Amino acid sequence: MHITAIKNISFGINIIDMHTHIGGHQNASYTKNDLDVFVRNPLPNDDVVEKMIVSDMDSFKGEHTTEYAGNKAALNALKNDNAYSLMAGCSPKNGNVQEIEKLFTEFPNDFVGLKFHPNDQKLAPTHQKYQPYFEFAQRNNLPCLFHTQVPFDSSKGGALFRLPDGSIDKSKLNPFSEPEIIYQAAKKYKDTPFIMAHLGSGWNESHDRAIDVLVESVRKGDANLYADISWVDIDSKPPVNGHSPKDHIVKVIKKLKGIGDSDWNKGDQSFRIMFGTDAPISRFKGDSAVEKYTKFVEDIKAAIRADVDLAKDADKIIEDIFYNNAKKLFYPAKAADAAQSAAKAAEKSGGNTGKIVAGVILGALAIIGGGAYISKQKNNNEKNL
Ligand SMILES: [Zn+2]
Image 1 (tube, protein in one colour):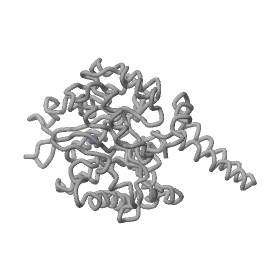
Image 2 (tube, rainbow, N blue to C red):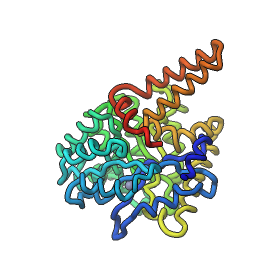
Image 3 (cartoon, helix red, strand yellow):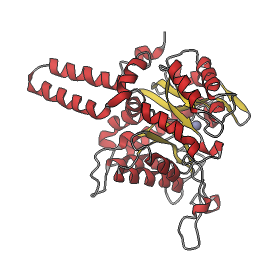
Image 4 (spheres, protein in one colour):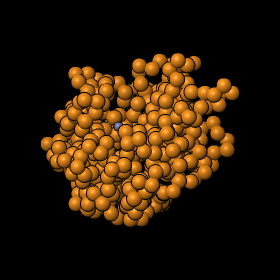
């Protein structure tokens, strides 16, 4: 029996890690075993990774005969273990969206989104070859995850490359995976969730660039951008001018809540930030993988709790970042079911208060839900989560 079945009842210590991998990377090949170390047992801090959302690196690098074959092999490698869901690895450069459609038709329970690595493909997501994939995602309201990366000048303490007048040297930005180009592509598919993985991986100003893009998109309402925080904590990069890359996790949450911004009228948009790790890449493999993973989790929690503005709601924010936000995005039917039963329970408890609570919950449900994806996912994800 799987341990999460027991731990499920203890909401708040569960984790959905929405960015993990199997497949080949830098002369190594990763398998289910490399991920099982995180999900088979509670972490040393007693948190439980209930779910990992996995993509196959060979598939999005275009190293299989077809995207269908690669992703199906990845699915088989995960052995129908419901601790895992998949994002279908897409390689628009040499792929064919029909292979992806075939995959979703055959395995609608297993795939919850599309994964792209524009930097590996050396193809910006604004290129027309992506369009059929994005149209497929739009039709099915599937989240699309993109590697993001902003090069930095290590000789200048990790600042971005600049022109003599101090402005950012745009020719040095990553032409395939910089946040701005993801945003540009996302605008055409305004309602489709486009997720910027690694919050613009790099150093401080790299993350700032992703945060600026995210905040701008919310302000303008012209795209549906999200981000994950894998690689935002890189311990090997020391603080510069008192700022550590890690601080950007707190910063982006505050910005999306509008804290300290008197012009903010968008409500709480921090649901756009999710926990991911990129496991088992880099430090999340080998003997101390679980220890380092747990440290990352605890570092994020500590940063949220230590912030003077976030401290009072820290437990809720932590639940959202580590669990609820990904659940709502990738498993909306389950999130909706939970809200509905909470509403029923509130109504059952009787009196006007119960009815008001039920109304509020169902109202929230209407915001979460909507459209084909909910009904589609309702059938599709019953065995997940
Ligand atoms: Zn990754």
